[in-house]
Length: 182
Image 1 (cartoon, rainbow, N blue to C red):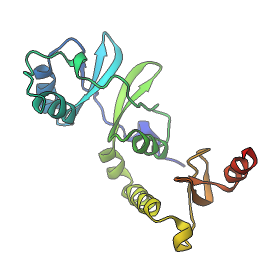
Image 2 (image 1 turned 90 degrees about the horizontal axis):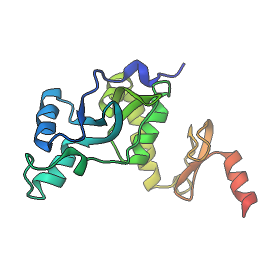
Image 3 (image 1 turned 180 degrees about the vertical axis):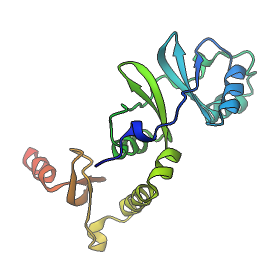
Image 4 (image 1 turned 45 degrees about the vertical axis):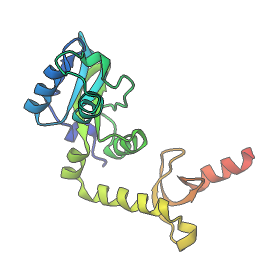
């Protein structure tokens, strides 16, 4: 039985209104000790803000945190996940979005945050598998003679034999479908 996001996500969710200052956000990030806030307008999530956003966009940009609004530096287009999704899907989304944390949103409401730290605490072997798969992408299996079971990057199914094709891990069914489209 897969581990679901709702089983391991962090609560409470630390939020900040989009019209607050970055200085307010920095204080809240420090208090939360999570390095991440969900930005809201009313109750609706409209963005995310991390400690690295503040460093990169404010500190390195030589701007005054007390003068800049959160809405002007937040990440407006963000990856989120549903609480009923499994953690493998969540980690896949993190990898594709190049993020370490995902807001968990059900029916437009923020219900939690899932981080790689949450996943590592619950399932360190999953992080080992991901690290292995990333290394394998650097050395395609055809070059090593290694084939592996895992998640097809095309259809999302877990299969016993995925192969590295065109910079993706693809199952046999999807390889056949891709071949017939040519």
